[in-house]
Image (cartoon, rainbow, N blue to C red; front, side, top):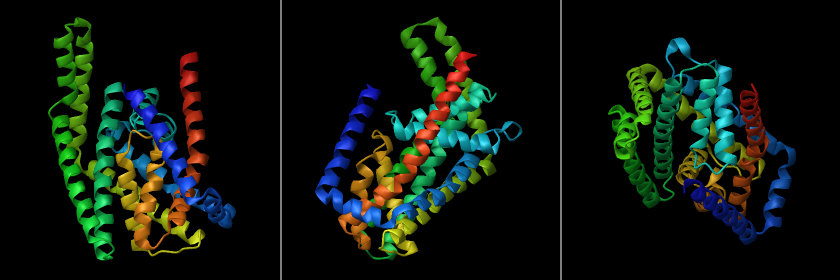
Length: 322
């Protein structure tokens, strides 16, 4: 069922993207992009530090004595991103890939699983803080106070949901679900699954007890989002309609968080473009300019994601052939 929903989401996203291109005029959008030419490749270069910060944030989830190397952390983030962006996995498949990679590198399955669960929570916390920053910029710039307060209200609701998710993790969510399944299905062989789930719950609690690495991970994840402001700012410069840093922060944070809500659509195809058109108007971008900017930011996806998926495929293939 989940796979069907994500396939439908992918089709819906691509249809929406095509519709927006037809609505705004493909030739007009292409003309805006072609004006900058090869310089748009700089958007990929300015984005690359995100891999370093995100990889280091994920490393903080492991016990200090058994952390992956920074290169492994970067590789895990790169391949997980490729899975989430190119495959209909509802943004969950990438986390599974990260856990499998950590296990392949010699980490216990419980530690690997716990690391990606808490890392996902850290990502959501960083997104909330980043979204609130964008809403604050929107208020400061007096562009649309009503939208800013609505956004803040939405982030408060999301914060409550994350708080609830945190509490159920601390309460032993996986062990409870495994035990419940064992009782409902009355399958004794699930006892091993239940034990493994409880061990993973214990690892999750240990991660949350390491406060300094956890706070550092949140800061690093927030930094990855802040760095992406430079990508939006540079994109606007290259496309010929410069904006200020505060406008770039507002534009990137709100478009990112709103697009991220559509997690069932791989890489938010169509949704990101629609949000850029909606929010871009607040900083003076026309619909064609906002659409061109969104497409320019996707150039890095074309460069980085296929290679990441191929690298993961090679690792998995070599494992099975052993």
